[in-house]
Image (cartoon, rainbow, N blue to C red; front, side):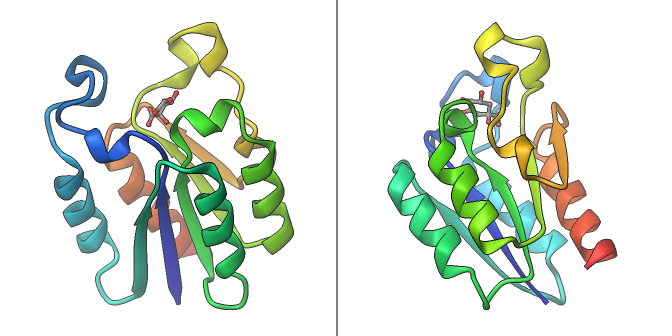
Length: 140
Ligand code: DQA
């Protein structure tokens, strides 16, 4: 089994970026938590600030990856292209948000990716990634 964990724009700034919302731990800390949760299975962690690069990465998963965990960050609320890429490859996907997008600004309440994702986990901090990986391990 292989999982692909994708992080969108500004998640490389964790630890610096709005700590009251995203916490004090940095992106490397998040990657270590993901590595631990993926123990015993094949996985790749990918981060990009560019929408097209994320679309390319999702397309390249076709035939190579069994499950996707994605935090599309700001592209959650804007990207039909990322939604279409996920629908095109049709790989089981869990959407993760560190913060609770439903209790923040109005524009964060809508997620394009939710229209495809099998499950959405929001507001559980970095643990949301671990829960998403556990869900895919249990269901794939
Ligand atoms: C986020 C929530 C998004 O609204 C925001 O644009 C992000 C991070 C989260 O993990 O809580 O960049 O996806």
